[in-house]
Image (cartoon, rainbow, N blue to C red):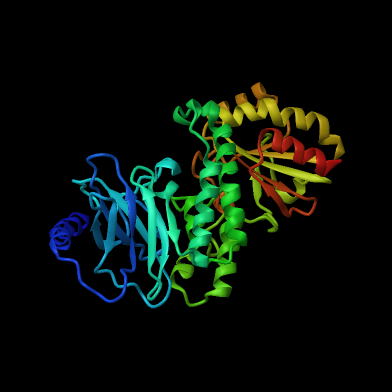
Length: 394
């Protein structure tokens, strides 16, 4: 089906290029100037996301018009008729020839080849940008409130992204936690923006930029909050309904503020205990790990063991739950890491009723509970975990 769509598009685009420009009494809905390198003459496409999931999504969205950038850098979408109500579009630049009009280059915000825009009837826009850095350099005039918010979001993302390092390019198990921490640092200002902006469209773009893969397991509270916020403001909007389907009950992991289920756990000593009987007097760390998980093992030795030694008499409890299938490998890892706190596993490997109940699929992961079993934090590692335990327990 996808091949057919692309093939049909190739038949339409030449007709758009060859059509003469209409003489109208009003300016085009979208026009402007693109700074070109010598010899460049790229094509601009106007792409409309038809769903929440198509926002900032590669090879997605409906191509509604095209415009050749002239040799002087000018362009105009003469045939495009904007909707009466404000709607989100993406201005995308592609070289000639280009196979896919809706291909988005987004590995580095400084080089992104598309620009989210809110367009509406009766409010023509002019865009100025560099061809090689469309999103990073774009200036939109006049600025509506929505486009002002999108412009602000763009700069927040550029600043948060930073420059890729060698560690970012070469992923291995020993750097997973560090990379997860950098990802969390990148996401934090985008989430803060989405939580405070008055623009629904800018918030939806921020949510998609937080996770282009639509995977919100590490930030479930954020997605749930976005659903509640925009569902209350725009209860009939289809994009909001689609966002909320990702945050529906049973889709996200247990949330901060929830009480953890009192699950029955098979312990390493052969006993079976209810989770709530293992809660500490002040704080409980539920550590989800495995003997084969290198970053989990490193955190056992370098973070959890010292915390256990220092704070277990001050009301800290640790409950490890391992995604293991071999009892020998599991017990050997416990001994080698000095992980002498309570340990549990169903020894079913990736098949885990406990993780299914928590709706967690990725390790290393953890949950921090108060004395009543209420979740107060999640997925803190390294120094952040040490600092949290110290403040909470003391």
